[in-house]
Image 1 (cartoon, rainbow, N blue to C red):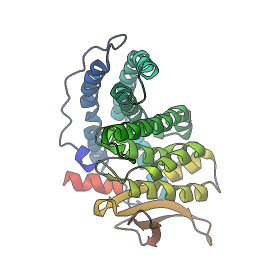
Image 2: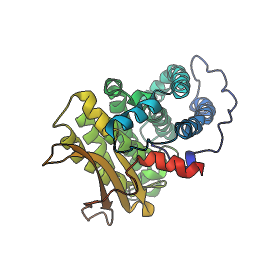
Image 3: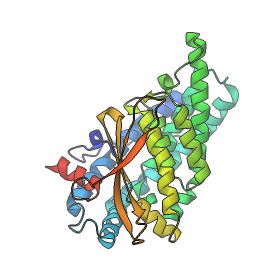
Length: 325
């Protein structure tokens, strides 16, 4: 998933990161290296934009399954994207090896209410978010995604721990009965957004359900994101997953899920969702579009089906076409 603000005009390389030590001595030291690493990885957005523009976007027969499969295969197997992600994976492994001893020591020694404890969780969640959601080629094959299940599971577990610790710390500082953990974990960490992505892409239904449950109890705003909208989307995906599971091999089902697209409108009060649904009469899989209106927390989100917006081509391609004009 890409934010419009993440589409830079050029792919100018950033300076290489400093050498990674064998073991980080402090959370601040890791954070400095992590900041440099993130600046370098930001080039991924411009590489994706260049690749999309070079491909010419979605094919003219945008509703043809074979043409769309070639479109997505070409995007996820692009040599420049794969090489960049392979380099990023090596860097992530080096950072993990140097950070793991420090993280384990902080979590073991610090009290759950200690700021160092929460910061360690915060940094680990940022790391896992990059590993899981900023490596497009890993989503080309369902087996590769399924192999990431332990990492998805760790993210959900750490998110639950971090949200609980943040809430306790907030209560201690404010004396309030209920504290908002998003105050500690929103703008930089993106917990709610990543939980939504996890609920969409993880192949373990139990882990997906845990992510949905965490979103349901999360405060109403996580930085830019309306968490009610994120929860509504994640919960609706359960319906999509159940319908998709009735037919086909694992790989066929996964490729149908590639067609899911979503747009958040009106500051998150309206969610547009596209996915392939099996026509009851013909038995064919057809692209459908639904809109969910997200209002007060106590109201049930109502999804209604509507005609496809525009040509029915992938919304991602339309976004890049708009950006390049």
